[in-house]
Length: 434
Image 1: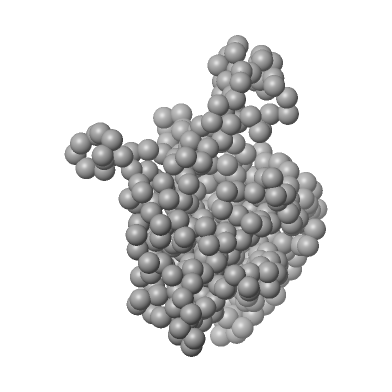
Image 2: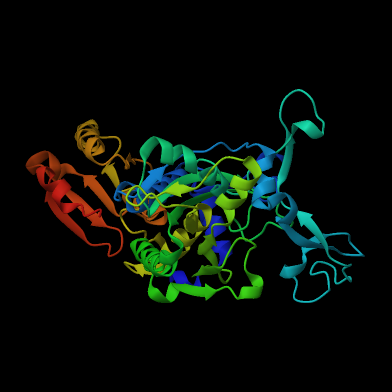
């Protein structure tokens, strides 16, 4: 079985068994739409985030990172249109009373019991809360449903502090909250999510050229994750289905186990957000060209990447079932740069002090250079290899009795199963981790 044929059940089972992702509040029966990342899931997520940060922020001169607050003045959401417009059509089954998003049903029939569903009504997806001691209308606030507005309300702060020249972007990775009617498909549709995105400010006359530039940059990003061209589809959103702020949007769909579905998007938000915040706040959010003195409201492009969906996509793409040495195995063939564990170090036998001492020396030396190096002495060598294959470790290093004689170790390649004797002082050169 190849990764293209892996089912969502395969992914969910492996994710829990090997400590990638657990159901949120699991010991109490869980809470729909919430998931907890275990040690390997955290490492994989951080590797994806770090790669995104290097590619789109640290390697560029035109990107300014921020980290905005989750709780914001409720007037922000009025100006952005979320208070009145951030909603989905909700229907209820007349028989079993289950609720669904209308646009997720193929026909007006309950998928659970076959009963008829009633008329749709709009359901606002923002989580409402109260700030302060009093719970009244004056204390209402919301958990942010998107990171974008934090960048728009900080536009003036960045301009005043750093005087950037157009075009430039504000970037952040942040947690968002959406009261999904029907969370589903593992971590694909959830109520608590992380988004990697930036708002790229530019002149209106430049938007089409910049839109094409960022479209191609997003394709470069997917290639860096190890995705093939056929794994990604670009879906142009028709005019009648565009979000209220958008003049053009392309959604990028990945070949998930359940179907091709959205993993990222690129939207041209025009000057909608800055203009509305300027009108509602009374604060001047225009930009003054330092060369000409021209004053205007910039337009914005927004490349958005769902971090959780990227984790699911990377695991799905890596999941492979094959045969090695006449035995079937499950292996996650992560690109080495994304693997949550890069190298595993084994003593051949855990009850031989001389092997353990030498292996600890090798482990500690590698750990200083490759932080995602782990120690594994549990079970026989075959079981260790299978366990490391299943979590996607590119290399296993075994210290045996020959190591004590000649200072060489056995290095096993995850994908091919081939083994090579390598001198300890040559180990770092041999491990190709991208």
